[in-house]
Length: 111
Length: 109
Image (tube, rainbow over all chains, first blue to last red; front, side, top):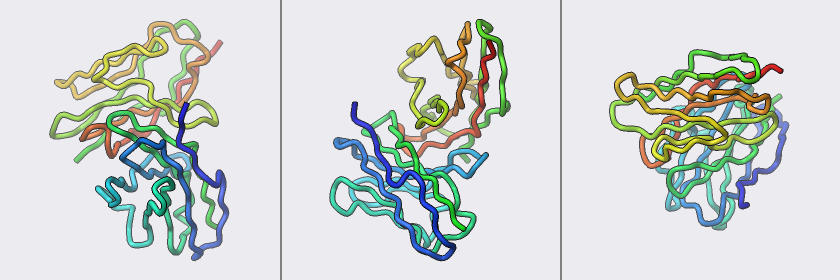
C-alpha cells in the first residue's frame, strides 16, 4: 500500500541553524501539506501546496518557513533560522481529494 | 473562524462499555468532518469521514448541523481501540484540515 514517507525521523539542530525536512508524498496525489504538533498540543496546519505553489498558509508559516517540490517527487519544508519554539513533530500529508494521508512525522529538536 | 473542540483530553472506559468521543465545530459554511486516529507510535490515519457514512472498526459518527457536532461512538469498546482520536474539519474537499486538540481513549481490561 502506498504511503507518505518522511526523513529524517528525528533531527536535532542548534538554534539559528537551517533545517530541511523531507517528504515523499504518494505519487498520484496533487495536494501536499505540512502540519506540526508541539509536544502535548494539537496538530496545527502550516501550509498547503498545489500546482507548484502555496495555496494556503497559516499564521505560523512566516518568512522563516518555505516549501519546495524540487524534483516532482520530494516535498520539502525549510526552516531558515530555527528557534527553540520550532521544536515539534512535523507531519507531511498528501491527498487527491478528501482523505489526507499522513507521514510518520519528523521530530525536530532545537537546542 | 474555523475551530474544532474536543472537551475531553482523556476518556477511560472498560472493555465492552459504550464509548462516545465528543467533537464540536464552528464554521460558517458546510465543512467536511473527519475523525483521525493515532495509535501508539504510528502515523495519523483516517478513521471516518462524514460524507461516506461508513462504520469503521465498529465506530460511527453522525454530523449534527444544528448542534454543530460530530461525535464518535462505538457500542462496545475494545482494548485495541486505545489511541489518540482527533476530530478534524476541512473547509474544502479535504484540504487544509483544522484539528481538534485530541482525546486520548484508554480502554481498560
